[in-house]
Image (tube, rainbow, N blue to C red; front, side, top):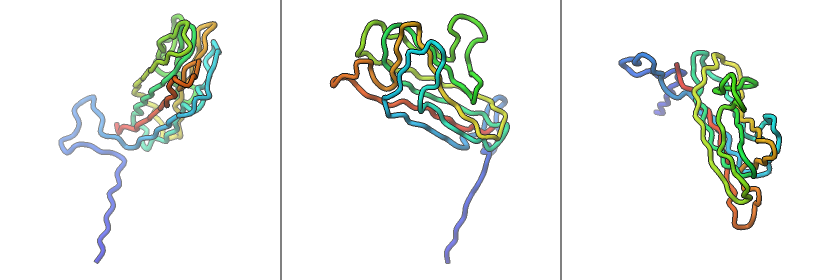
Length: 172
């Protein structure tokens, strides 16, 4: 006799319920790992970071999406301004001020071999069950250069790394 069972759910809630303000559990996780080191820019206007995007289709309209990203980068001259977007909507950036962005990446000044790391974590409420894209964009301070996953020099003793963007659907 062969017995097979399958449990399917789109919402997980503890037996005793949830405390006010808390969500249930993780429904799905999607991740993009960018291990190439060919993206670079000198643009002072925001441009997509090639490969740093991930698609998710929420199963419930009341779900939250937890976005996590880790960037490894190099460059030269000053600061980098990074935005997290849901489709074309910038998330987490102030509505006014100088060089508004979701996260300011630590600038690299007058070196060609240094690399930095930056991480972000953002909880979004997209209120949809449609396919949604989360992505990162970058701009550099005038005269600057940004290189994903490598230093500007990219020499034989310099590191080459990977960057990630991860989304998790959390039940509401």
